[in-house]
Length: 225
Image 1 (cartoon, one colour):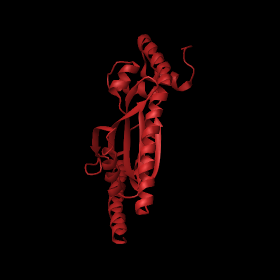
Image 2 (spheres, rainbow, N blue to C red; image 1 turned 60 degrees about the vertical axis):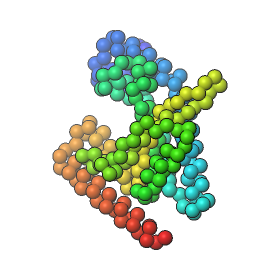
Image 3 (cartoon, rainbow, N blue to C red; image 1 turned 45 degrees about the vertical axis):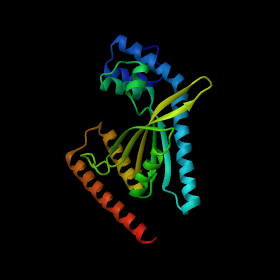
């Protein structure tokens, strides 16, 4: 264990009970990841810039912003390794790049449901972006009540010697959806992913209430214009 430099890495190795060969792969991925950070961070910056430009354009043309705010994150190497193990993929950075599409992520928080689909459509109109997957959890919510629109977008990143397409997962949701998702995630994290059935029922009820509120707020907004 002397190769580990942080407590989080040590705890994951202990929890997953990794073999020596897997520990070596773990260390290699963790070390290689720091060389790859620039690539994924660059993809996030590229896509963030496009979203900010779209938002600014709407402010000028239509005196409103479809995007309330943006959040971005990069998976930690420990989280990447855990996902590779959970999905039974090879433990290597090449495997992570090939099989994990949410290493880089952007969350787009919108005011209204219509704005979610507007942003998705506008991103799809960019001829340099490639939308490789779309999952609509708004029209088809998850069983627990989760709602959001998920896109996986291949973003071109230009370096001095090459162009590389880097996947970024984009989650687009309303403020209310984001509030619910954050609360559900916090509860699930505290209970180590097992949520009591009564709490799960209440969360589902809240999700339904929030969904109806989103629709009503959108209707009010439309009728006021």
